[in-house]
Each structure stands twice: as structure tokens, then as C-alpha cells.
Image 1 (cartoon, helix red, strand yellow):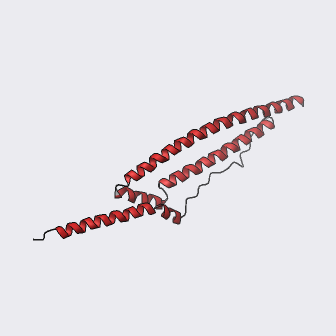
Image 2 (cartoon, one colour):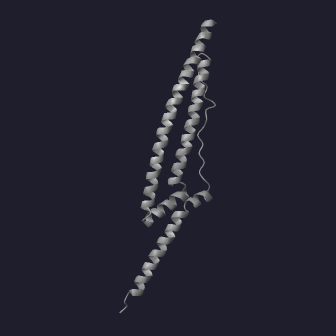
Image 3 (tube, rainbow, N blue to C red):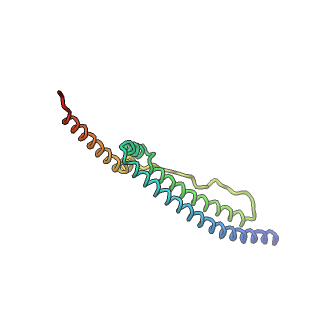
Length: 157
């Protein structure tokens, strides 16, 4: 009995050491990941605004936002995936510690957290496409005015 108790106690101590080490590593990894995603988001935003000099880009961004496959949806999916990763790692850590306290054995994963992602509704997707829809209207107006002026200047003789 005492051997089993000492093994369980040693398992708890190892679990606590593991938890501290894991927490330090996870915090640092979160910082690196957050920095990477901030830089990526800034670069994507700059590329999107620069590409809007072309009406084709505005059309593509509008279609992507309405279809739910646009830049914002990718960012939203990445955030949902990140949140799930944190939940799952916390779950795995708790299961590891529970196993150590019990002195070993199998881990039941019947209750693991499932990844669930909900796309935004149509109203939210249309709202995200307002900027590009407005730019398309401006491009349409500019091309119409340019065509109309060219038509008026054309000499029919």
C-alpha cells in the first residue's frame, strides 16, 4: 500500500513539474504565435488595400465575403482553431494529471472537447462586403463617365 501511495505521490509531483514547464512553454509559444499572426494580418491588410486599385480585386473580395470564404473568414477560422487548441491542450493536461494521480492506467477521452465552427450569417457577410461593393460602384461610375465622355467627343463624320 505504501509503495503505491509513494508512486502516486511521485506521479503528482512529476505532474506539477510538467504543468509548470508546460505552462511556460505554452505562454512563450502563444506570444510567438500572436506576434506572427499580428504581422501576417498587417501584411494581408496592406496587400488587400493595395490590390483594391483594381476593380477585379474588389469583385473577388466581395464574392469571397458573401460566399463565406473571404479574408475575414480565414482570420475568424484561425481564431476559432486557436481557441480550440487552447481548450484541447488544457483538457489533455488535466487528463495527464488525473492519470498521474491515479498511478497510471488508461486515459478516457470520451469527453474530449469537439471543434465546432459556425460561419457568420448572411447579414454579417454582406456587411463585411460593403467596402468592396462601394468600391465597385465607384469603379462602375468612373468607367461609365469615361465611356460617356469618350462617346460625346467622338466625331461621327
